[in-house]
Length: 169
Image 1 (cartoon, one colour):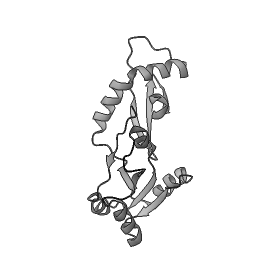
Image 2: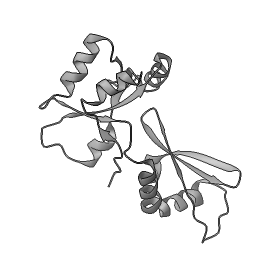
Image 3: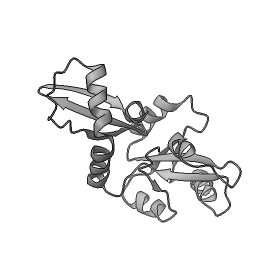
Image 4: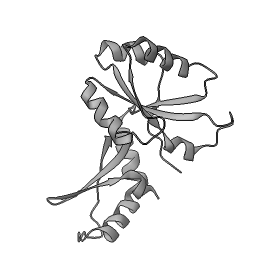
């Protein structure tokens, strides 16, 4: 089973984001949910939105995903952009939109630690030269970067950053 940690994007988030000064959204195709479930509506497009306060941050993210056909920078204070995002959120829309936030980072970290601990050990054994005793617990930290989930594993003064999908497989 594929882990899908992100919240559905709700219309109520729009005024809140504007109030918080986080007016820029970067959209990209969200593959984790497509793998997770078959869509009975005949192929809704799953998108992931990440929010930014500064246009430069949004451009950095957009540049990282610009090959994605659904990559875009949405400015919530630009009326045509605002109308388009509202339209995409309507019932019956061909889009299913997720927000790159999790309800509880601690709960997600606990779930990942519990569910994938054996896979972390396997990864460390196969992909690193770390010598970890059998009873040592490898405790990962979760990081989100440009809509991707990464796992940070630390051992002593060494650390590695791995795409979560590489552990999940």
